Amino acid sequence: MKLYNTLSSSVETFLPQEKNVVKMYVCGITPYDEIHIGHGRCYVIFDVLRRYLQYKGYKINYVQNFTDVDDKIINKAKELNKHPSEISQHYINSYYEIEKKLNITPAKIYPKVTEHIDDIIISIENIIKKGFAYVTTTGVYFDTSKFKNYGKLSKKNLDELQAGSRIEVDETKKSPLDFALWKFSKQNDIIFWESPWGNGRPGWHIECSVMSMKYLGETLDIHGGGMDLIFPHHENEIAQSESLTGKNFVNYWVHNGFVTVNQQKMSKSLGNIFALKDIFEIYDPMIVRLFLISQHYQKPLDFSIQEVEQFKNVYQKLVNFNEEIKERIKNSEPKTGINEEVVKYINVLINEFETAMDDNLNTSSAMAVLHKFISYVNKNISWIDKTTLNYCYTKFLLLVEEIFGIKVDLSYEIPEIVQKLVSQREIARRNRDFETSDKLRAQIFELGYIVEDTLTGPKVKKRI
Image 1 (cartoon, rainbow, N blue to C red):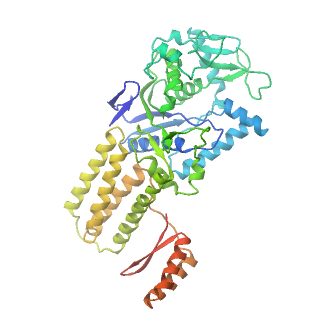
Image 2 (cartoon, rainbow, N blue to C red):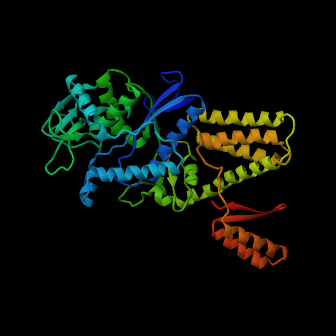
Image 3 (cartoon, rainbow, N blue to C red):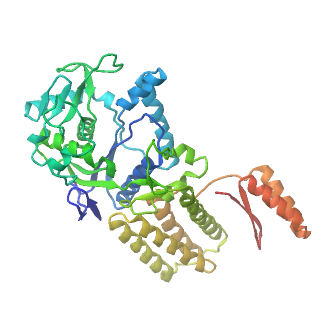
């Protein structure tokens, strides 16, 4: 498999440090507000990468943190007259609900900053001892001038970085580029910890270095996140981690593209940040998941109701195919042997799917192969024998559910009221009372179901 490595600016063959193990860390949320569509893209993309690597035989040690102490959390706590831990835990719980609905595989561990303060303090002490940090009246700062490769991830030189708009302003720092490892408490701060340098709390960047290395070791195979984290967050992670250990921190830096809304960047000022829980009021989470993997992960993904709407039909097609092939298998007569011609072509398609995914996780091309798979089986389903259909079905579930994480094998019972309406409609249809039949079909549709007329009688499906 090949992945684009932000550090080298090139697509590289993926070779983990251990033959069958991948150490993977993805930056988690700062839990101060609802999870939005941008978060969704990041965590779904890295879930697909994780699933595909598992499919290829790797064991994945996946860690994703929660930044549960931050200015935004503290400000919201003050605004609502609550403790910051109440705010963070509320949105952490909300994240777990969203994660489950999107069928994202849970991380091996979700470390929190507040549970690793001692580890962070020890790391900062060691960075100071090694001469890479200094103490001022406002906090402890990393001295970027001491790290000779600072800027190697974002590909910016120091002059460009100093002119950047995201640099913290603090007159006590030696350079605008220097970043906080520990921030001293201010008057009326409602959360802080004791440290050798004074009461305060960790800076943003140190947490990820400390927690990722604690659970995965000093060198990670994959570190992921959105492109917005390349600078300053990931740049600073590299500087402090490699200064601390003297080793390469991450072998493959993988970043997903931005989500825009109607071609505009998401921002609170524009009021165009869409919470996933609100989107789920309109669309099944699997439709949203399909949308999130529809473009190559490095490309921008534009969110709009019109864009997501298209994937209702795509998801319906997947669900319908799943039901149709299951029904055919159930009613088909078993035959001796298996159709080698069908199996051979299905295997060709599987290889095409893998080739797309091996090519820097090209989910868009892989999705096209999946549709080719469905079209081929649909075209020949009337004569393919039961044993061969079972083979096709197993491979279909492998691609769509195991790798893409799209749940299509829906188990549900038709409500009694819907069953009664279907029976009444069938009577009306047989009596050629098409006006009544159409009204009953509409009622069934409003209740969330679709009725189809087949040679063997009416067939009811859940509406997506």
